[in-house]
Length: 64
Image (cartoon, helix red, strand yellow):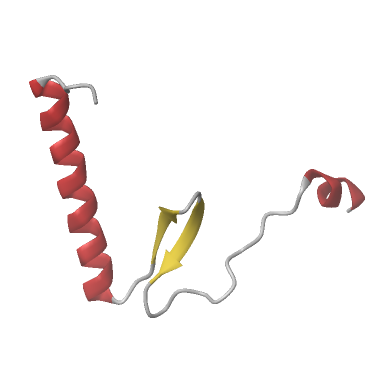
């Protein structure tokens, strides 16, 4: 695996901390979050919708 430069590692650590803080805040407020898992977006949290919004495909857009 490639070794990251110290500046790049600092930036990555900052981004990870910001994401962790934001997800924790959403959890405390009872808001759901959208994360990427197994190659697709996943809604997590107690108030997450059961079926996420499905964007119409190009075929469906042209029919309307």
